[in-house]
Image (cartoon, rainbow, N blue to C red; front, side, top):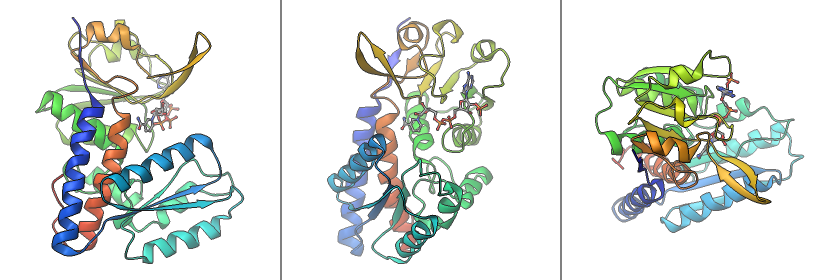
Length: 297
Ligand code: NDP
């Protein structure tokens, strides 16, 4: 069998077209230009690339982007003061603080200081709780961007997910746990695996839906996969092949594509969905802050 390739790049382009159309509508009907502030502390090159691409994408879709940079020596108190300013700034509807932060700053303290209505990353404990309680989900609220993007792709490929066996490998707050919650909301039977899970291969072999969010290059082998399963590969790993840098996922793609029914490639699968969902969340946040019905994007 040769798997259908889930084209995240193409899906993200369609999502961003809807974001741009909704942004234009918010401007013309309500005089609101959704504003996204991206805060970078330090000079980590990978973080700088992410921040730049987020700002560029926001501009392209008609949002206002604020690119805020601080030296790596910034104190926690100074960053908290910056967050308070952004919370109070009515032209800023979404606040994203790029992680990781330097060691003198506690990321949880920063996330908790962001106004939950401006928390476009969906990491604030209140928004995580709303996801857990079912108040927020794939079609409403501020849900973490990568998990939201994964679910949009899954629903596009499979339609109704009811009753499917889903295995999520990884239990981080930013990817594994929120994806598991979203799958549960779609009435999947969800198992969350992690580094202490016994016989991961046998567990994966039962999965109709397998989400890998581990950070270990090509760990999931083709032989672990249930024939016809849908594979969402969140992992982004840099490896060296013949002296050249290459990006690979957590799934051994070539092997898996022989067995699976559908699979996301790396790059070009989940990655483009993350930025598209960040813009989607900013537009939703702008509508919520204006007391409007959140747009269905
Ligand atoms: P974390 O390091 O926070 O979490 C990794 C998880 O994988 C942990 O729960 C860990 O278990 C588990 N794990 C580690 N080794 C194993 C193993 N041998 N078997 C089973 N489980 C294991 O990573 P993130 O969740 O932040 O990210 C995961 C991957 O997704 C990374 O490659 C990251 O780059 C990528 N990513 C991609 C994004 C995108 O836009 N496409 C966005 C965000 C992340 P334990 O808890 O027991 O330690």
